[in-house]
Image 1 (cartoon, rainbow, N blue to C red):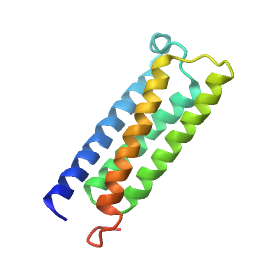
Image 2: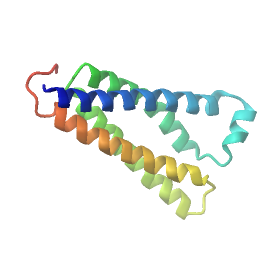
Image 3: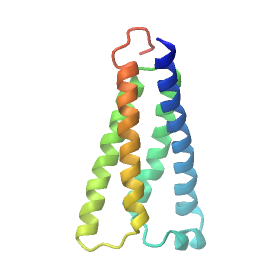
Image 4: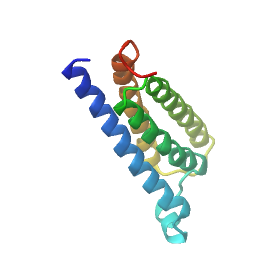
Length: 135
């Protein structure tokens, strides 16, 4: 693996780890932080909130897999992307049906989808074809 490849994979891993940690902290605070924390979130959509919180753990696992250059990190990253895109679609249906939501959720879900699309491309390019990595 060349230095350029290591750098791209390392950046993707760090982004996944940081994004995961922040997602777990934010979601955990909202879900388990009491009435004040829930009130601060406004019209949070419960299935989106729960998905993002649980996905945060997958982000961390994927980031560790990337650091260790495990090929499974490719499939986990793609699964995270697919799950996030699917939740974005369900969220869109919720909004179109007149469900309450926060505008920041729209931005956050689009950001999550784009970040995991980018991470998935990097990981697929870096680990998907390499024969010198851990399975």
